[in-house]
Image (cartoon, rainbow, N blue to C red; front, side, top):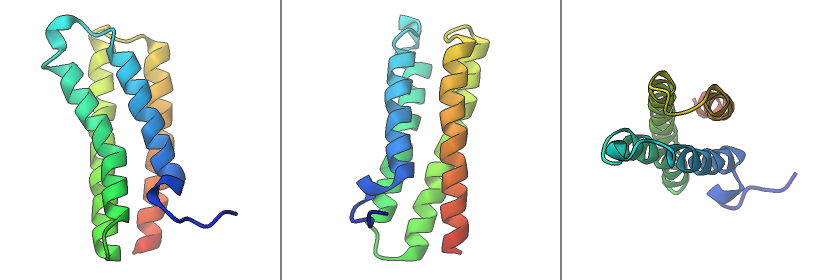
Length: 119
């Protein structure tokens, strides 16, 4: 097992980055009138997840790290809600929804485990 030298070595950060890419690709098909609505909201939310993981990792305290992971987890739940809205509005297919949602569940489980270990 390779030692963790950077937040980039964290599997949860790597998966969160993959989720961002999937969200950007998926949201390209949203209607143009959503550019300042759901498209912007869903992308900002997705970007927030790996950003908070990285920022928390860079903090000098376990408490701060845990708090930023909790913020990332909150953004993840927000994203799950937004992709459900996109599905309900027929902006994405069930297949796209499943791909993104399943990856978000993986990230959620990893975040939960890390947060529990930091307690």
